[in-house]
Length: 335
Length: 162
Image 1 (cartoon, chains in turn purple, yellow):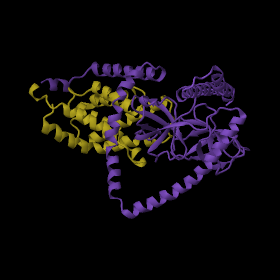
Image 2 (cartoon, chains in turn red, cyan):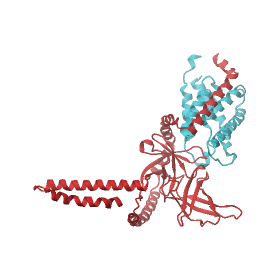
Image 3 (cartoon, chains in turn yellow, blue):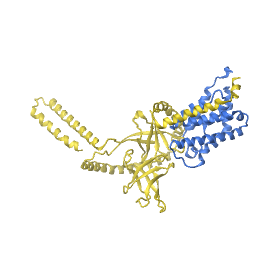
Image 4 (cartoon, chains in turn green, red):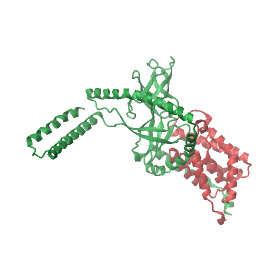
């Protein structure tokens, strides 16, 4: 009877309910877009995300497991061969890199610059892709508990991929370079020309905005991050220029580029922890660390001397032992 | 009446499966036409069990979708509430229509809600490509309706969900 009544229930209640829910939704959206007050709730609900994406990704993982199980021996051999060749190439590059890094460090010492050569990285695995085809976002399996922070740069083996835009307790969302809301400051590796690479919504295309018609840029140029936005570390490859269209009727050239990172194929990503201190702070910190290390060394030497030699150490000897440590401090400070 | 009110968990199970289907990774070309699983489920349950599933359920479900997709809280909630509202508004006609005619009406309903979705999406600061492709999910969902209707109907009758 009740069901029948409800079946024919009609009147203002429907419209009123819609109004209530619509108002609630709009208010929520406005608060969520402008303020941070909903972040704790989002975090708590975010616990849902991991298991759901885990189950949703299960078929794909099963399929890849099955294909691995049944891939033929010849295929594996071929892949092995390819990987070996690749390793060889990489090792050759690494050999050169070691020498270059050393040279770089020495030159930086000469320049009295404390810029870091290497950044610390954390490997993350892709666990989900945004279901909306017009946004390019990924879900990764590292979150706040692993030290991931908002705006953190994300790389794959070939270049920059994007940045972290949402941090949940155990997962994080990464906005890719090619999303239509994303832009990154870059420079041409060949001559240092600066530009801004904006996403187009096409996973294989970036566009350089406001490049002068006469600018020295051509197809094949490598674009690297310039580090000017203070968000991405400088010097990582971003894209290669695909075509440059110069139309004298237009104020700017149209420059299209292809991202070097495999944005829609990479399964493992690198989260970069670059140093956010200023050069002065870094110099100070390294000087302090050097001083501490020297003091420790001196103390160790003293202890060793006391323990090894049964004869009493004269104050003169102690002073002589300490001196090198004291002298070393200013040298360390310069580094 | 009250003796038959068991098996309500099936409704929630269907929503759970719908949530999974809406985030399952798919190839690029299929993603553009991903069916609106949750809108379909909400339509069915609102139409045939209006005393169990209504706008409140749709709204709560929408919030979960928002959290899963990382969209603004309330965006998908509003869209699903709208689906529930339109279906409830048309329920007296929809219930006596043959299935293909229901499909046609739902095509319009889903098309409208997709339009609202696009509008909210642009308000949130995105620049989607200027195509009519955003209506494709509505079309796919309307084409899926007869099959989903048959499946859910047989489940509903067999398990006597009421």
